[in-house]
Length: 415
Image (cartoon, rainbow, N blue to C red):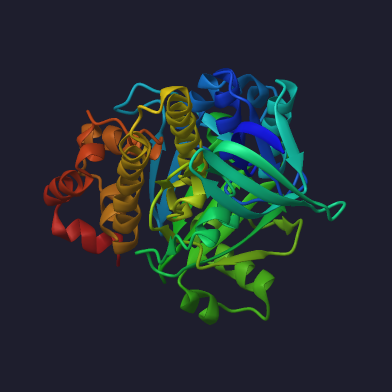
């Protein structure tokens, strides 16, 4: 039977970062990927923290050479209100920009870079079962091209399968999210009338008066990703005979988008993801860890998905490497507890966005620059910087900031 140090399920962003890191440690790695790249995936807006991780595993150069459009911040709208966050103005001294990435190209670029370094990525391989042993695990998988079933023994298994959720399904680890059931309806367009200069690459987030929000993510080459995230009733009540019409009407109802998207043309039929938020009972167990979206997916509002995938992959490969070297590391403490801290920080901001409290803070003209800089650090993905009280105690920090704002201003935001 074939043997390896680490078997990674999934060759998306989490899988490739984990593989690159483990290879850098000198570990033998095999990656099994069900799909063929490139393939369409949502989650197209990175955060500056992603650059740090890519640099650590020597993959940043492979992304820089793709000439993706630079994302220097985020612009939020609600009716006539507008607030811009610039990644160059953050409490944490990190990267001042990141990238907007078509995921088909981005994921393939990462996988190609790992293969170029000597990585063993096997496409069209579907994991069917995993048998855990005292000294590792036997992974059974099917070659989808031939239909043959193979087995490989690994000292450790990392599940980076994302929405595939291979181990959570096999081990009954899934659990409901504490976030509301929402739907995402989206497509790619051309003829987007963009801002010029450095402002071109900013993500636009537009709050809908009926609840939910719109994203506008520009790519190099003239294609733009647009989508709406909302409760089911928003889509049920939206005018239009089909999803394409509903999406178009929801986008164009907003004054901030009427000019920018007036001439837009859909380049593909709209796609829908329902009930995307999901939780998990545990992040690790004997001889395995869950990584990226396989752990818990919150919500796309702050583009945290790829950042959490990268962070968890990097942390996991560090911890797993130590475990394989001498077995002395506490995986629950060093990996799971660490990741839960960052996820829970983002969770506070997601919830505060949907309750409206964070929107009040965003659009307030009375917040201080110090508050804005600390919040911007969170928006940049630096949610493990415990020196930032908006990370270490986001509930108290947000409550304190909101307590300084006049009530009448809140009514104006939501009128």
